Image (spheres, rainbow, N blue to C red):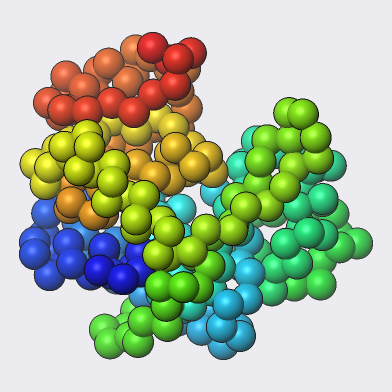
Length: 242
């Protein structure tokens, strides 16, 4: 495994019908995730390799498919929190200089119209426009995979680029130290726009386990109910949730 898309391909190869994601009580297999991400891939392949594609979505099937499709196409995923202020969004767009922006209509409305010199793609459209079977993986281990900005608590937010190689190195260590298994079912209320939440997605792809998505970390009753209903084995959370 050399790149993040390789993690998905291995899981598809090992058990394509296994449930990868549970979201809003709907279950999606690794094969379905792969097909949807390939649709995103087909929609953005025309852009230059290693260009930045901004991604602004809540925890959802659409986020996972878009993120993996961006990486399959050899682009850099600029991951933006849906809760970002318009001011910080403007600063990130100026800094990251994306070639396109993938989001929902509601979130895209936060964009400063004067700064839009890139394509704005509505996520539901690009998930259904193309369905292809055979693709080439354009990502390389030393390429940047994703770009996440710091919170800006003590200074101006800074963009941190992470390569595929670095991400897989970290993911492998997490899996080995914490003992994640293929049979695990993880409750995930952490946002993918945070490195902790995104890391949980990577570990699930790495071992081929199942994740249960939640849109926030404060609806504790919903989190506890999903643990019981799906017999979850792991919970990734921050102190406030605990």
